[in-house]
Image 1 (cartoon, rainbow, N blue to C red):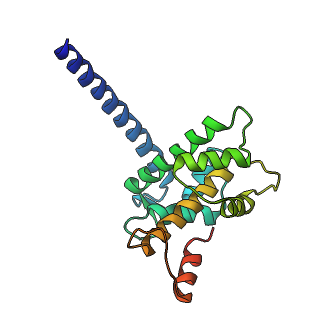
Image 2 (tube, rainbow, N blue to C red):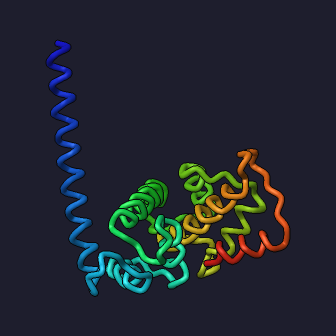
Length: 189
């Protein structure tokens, strides 16, 4: 029985690896189509157009923030490997949104709070509702997928920036004016 279970586990892992290879190949093809100038990397305008084809409309500033979040080599564009990291983050957000939208096509603020906690963002009420107000584009308390993604891109960027100053990992930082200006300039969307 033990050998049989091991073999089943091995077969399952092989199937998962094969699926992952196919997904990566599919994403590579998509990436190469978006990389219209064949440089091996994509720019914010290219990514914006590609996301729009998938019915995700974002201001260029949000797309630029997406690239900054995963631009590991800091060259202002997105390589395929950087794109894979962004894609994983976006899939996580899409799944979380789908789990909570209940067939409505949008999330209410309480759903957004639940989703943000699921993703790992824990904010107090004043901070959470302030962020919600900023990303509720239609000002009706209904967050479409692109609104939710924009909000999460902001939160992740803010967390990354905060963590860069919280070197002692205490959950608190002290900033002088220059550092504060740097933070606000790097978290803008």
